[in-house]
Length: 235
Image (cartoon, helix red, strand yellow):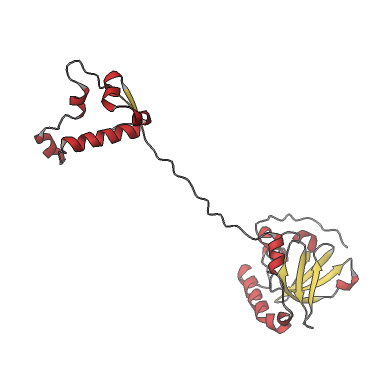
């Protein structure tokens, strides 16, 4: 009926504004258009409500008096909707520590309990590399491991500035930005820093060496990172 803005001039030389606004549609035209002719009272109520919604200042003025004096600009009415944010609020670091979300209880520190997890991880790597064939390039496997989820991997500390870590082998249970938590065959939970350590991982005859300094980020961040082929300084 109207565009975004429409200029309506209800001042006519021969007819009053009331007759123009509430003039009935001819019966023949109404039938052709399939419209139902409303009563005068309903028409007046509709027009008043429409004008008050389009012109907020009419709430305190008489519509007929207002329209008889001036041209009226009708603006497109659009109700503003408040957008509700549904962003999930996570735990803070302090709350996670208080709840002990990442604590592995002593009764759960058993090597045999996590062997099925290790078998699932091996199948996950085989699917990720589309099958580990003897003719595959080691560099391709290395790049896949850098971005892969390592929970369940069998890792060994190959080199370290701290001699007590060298030779430590176990299944990786937890990974954070700076450390690995692994369970050894002796059912001991060990915390190994990534920095200044070189880790080796063996699967189906392929042995891959990864520098811990390249893994100093969360597992979720590492999966989206683009690693550049750079030479690493030996420890």
